[in-house]
Amino acid sequence: MKIAVACMGGLVAQHFGHCESFNLFDTENGKITEAKKVANPGHKPGFLPNFLGDLGVEIIISGGMGGGAVEIFNERNIEVIVGAEGDAKQAVESYLKGELKSTGSVCHDHMHADECGEH
Image (cartoon, rainbow, N blue to C red; front, top):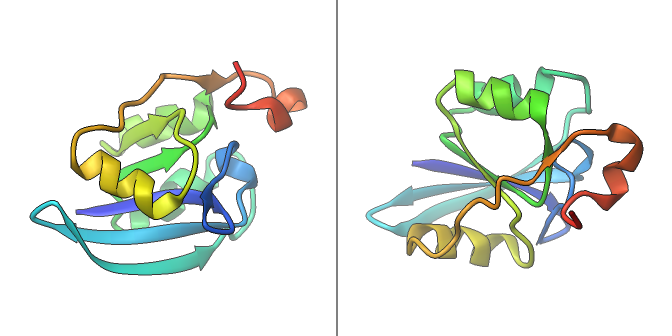
């Protein structure tokens, strides 16, 4: 299973579309088998969910995310986990243990993108 984490450095980004990069983790039998970083190719409506889906991502973890991105991920059968914070690798490990659950926090207004994860 391939898990992507929207990141600022090694931390979970609080807004999916404005992250610096995506840390991609290949997992097998509940363990991380490989990790790599892919730069965010740019925030354009509808682009990033398809970009990650085309990379084989099955789960996306972020602090916050807009409703449009959530819809596209859902259409592609990619699980969305929002409300995460802290170290990206630890977030994936928590997810694999069944300890990381989505808060369902969706950002509705890009004017307040810097506040995602705070509501």
